[in-house]
Length: 247
Image 1 (cartoon, one colour):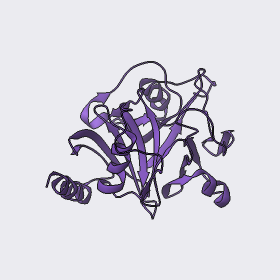
Image 2 (cartoon, helix red, strand yellow; image 1 turned 120 degrees about the vertical axis):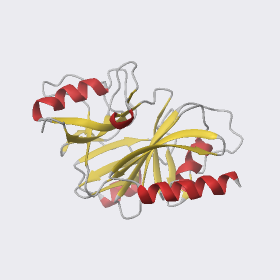
Image 3 (cartoon, helix red, strand yellow; image 1 turned 90 degrees about the vertical axis):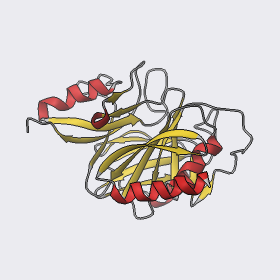
Image 4 (tube, rainbow, N blue to C red; image 1 turned 45 degrees about the vertical axis):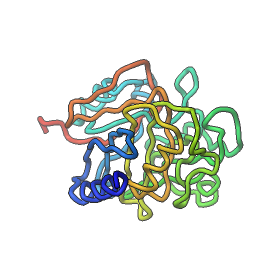
């Protein structure tokens, strides 16, 4: 009964959502914040370094970089795993320029728990691809970030996710609709397993493909709701850019 109620609520919320909407949601007794972006119309970007090549690392730094152009963040979150120097672990493209190649092979940690994937932003759409499919299709991404593991792959949970797992962290990620017009970002407000987090994207958010961004360091910025999580410097950041009020 609870699960049916949450699913119905999510459907009603999605139908009423504007281009960028962040809302609270409870699924199977776990709390999440969900932000839905209209990828066909919104200015969705990735950020890593400023114009001088210095790491941005914080939502406030991204806003400082945008302000001279009369822009600001409406929403943002960390968007992929990084090395100690905050450089991306996997594929990274910013404004059409590749900064890190695709890593297709398995490796240590969550990133190497194959299949992993790539979040690709193109004109008028955004998509989560499983990495090998991404390599085969070679989409022309204006922005791209590779992370892992995949949460949902063609409507199915990652095969390594266990319902009885004891590994729990604050987690964040993104799922996309089949037509690429919806990009749905989620962050847990407490500790969840991969199975619980993936089930949210599959069963409630109705995204056939979804990608894990990170756990433990997960943070979100939501201007409309006065949320700006702080902490140590991040690597890649994904955000929706809007005009600042003075423009």
